Amino acid sequence: MILYPAIDLKDGQAVRLVHGEMDQSTVFNDNPAAQALEFVAAGCEWLHLVDLNGAFAGEPVNAAPVEAILEQTDVPAQLGGGIRDMATIERWLNKGLARVILGTVAVENPALVREAAKAFPNQVAVGLDARNGRVATRGWAEETDVMVTDLAKDFEDAGIAAIIYTDIMRDGAMKGPNIEATEALARAVDIPVIASGGVSSLEDLKRLKATKVISGAISGRALYDGAIDLEAALSALKS
Image (cartoon, rainbow, N blue to C red; front, side, top):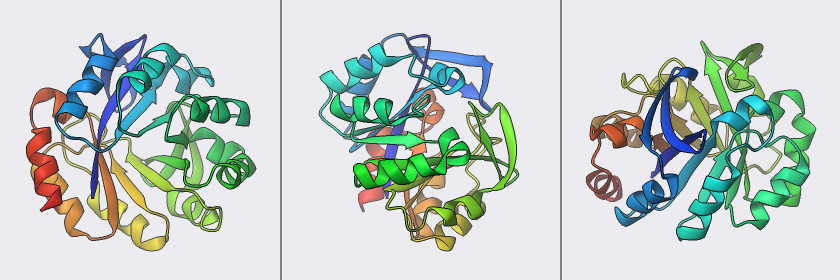
């Protein structure tokens, strides 16, 4: 199971939110590239980047710090937030991004997801963010009637690289991930599922790995707060 350290970008800084609320942000590093280099030095295999402003604006906002991270690090990175058309997808992949994450458009324009996945094999992931099992879009500001599992199944034949499943009510709350829901989703589809939201201890990571069907986990606040030692966690997940 791959551990993805998260760098959430707001106004050019690395921050963490609680439950996705933009007015409840904590700045952890005003130099996101330096933060990325710390994670790489600890041995991470991937980086998970989110353009929080972009998720609300519907277009990239924190391009400069993302580009700095891509230029200064040598591990693959995935990015979500404000990526809603083919031109933006192609631009990011051309800049060296390993994988784009499509969230809002997965609900509003699923045909784009299929087109992108076909054009860029293994470089397109779908981000499914949910409250009580229902998908939320536009920076989690809008809740839909679409059930996570139903939407995931719709992409079974699209060739997407992964699904990033976030339980919004667990995100940034340091209360543990929704393992039951994440495992159920992973068993319902053949697409690799990455857990996000609430991953706050080494024990959480071990429990996710023990399901044997969850392919990865994203953690942010716990790494910044020291609740998870990245080097120790990476070692434990490889053993």
